[in-house]
Image (cartoon, rainbow, N blue to C red):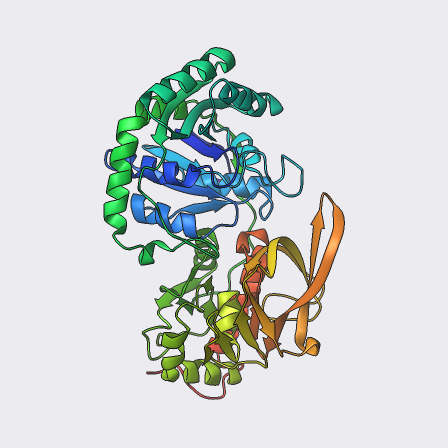
Length: 476
């Protein structure tokens, strides 16, 4: 892309909901399933989600991109959208929570509506039609008038009793609001995707996933007005965007990236940034690989569900030994959330079983039955680490049920703070470093502060050049 440009008018549509759990994910997945059969669909997801994007990627065959209006500045967000947007197909954006829900009570900070306005995209609103008749019009009117700048131009109704109920709701909504009704899903459709403590169960673990997607696609084809939605998507408006400035890369370096059923929480654009800065990403499975990819000079272990696969991870003792020795030898290793759990002394599961892990630092993790941390946070480095120097700051997101115990507070190198509506709420410490290793719970988007990606790769390059290495521990 050129340094400055006005994007072409590419068809795009945001599928939003009145609230969490209203059915927008089910409808989005079903619509993608049908449209992908006839045209190219580029999926996007609003907010800091990893699981829904995995379903989007599986269905469309194109990597889903996260659009986060709080982690990213507005121009960067526009540019990342424009870079992936399809000129010959359609861009489908699944919203997050309720249409206007963002950071705190500010409607234009990270909400689905905020993203839709930034990108000039029309919105289809999913509502719950159960137990309603004329009240559905009042509901839609409230969302329509709350922000007149938003192009809310379609409604899809979930949990409809039957065709008669749908015709009643469609009549009253279109008559009293002027918003087109683009179809429905019946109540008790019998197609469910299981849940887990972080959301939907990852698509790799859903039994009969392909069959369920085909059934959902057939249902959507029969009850949703897809030609109308495609016509609405043509209302997308062009917008100006310039490429965000990036730091200079550090030269070629091979970076091992853990990616399998246990570790798969990565922002696709963060991985792309690492590639742009000179990294060759070498994906491997901590569940199956017996050694790190040959020739790699750094390791990135993202989030996921290591607690679900704790026994299998613990049984791979050869890889665990190599990672521990590599950290001792100075290899840069970055562990994020699930990665922190893997690098810790061990994982105690929700069933009470304990499995030893890498043991790169003092402390172990244990699952709990409630969220330990949830929401957007800001990090400040209290000591230099592989991502940056003392005093540097970055926005992040935290969401985990596990907790780190017996780590020793003197080991923390990062201060975490949480605010709401600009007011301070709470603060705590996190981030453990050992030589060139850093393990922390918050999830980072490297485009939020590209300098941190450069700092990480710079250490990997130095290790590659022999600055830290005591001996070669990377060969099989």
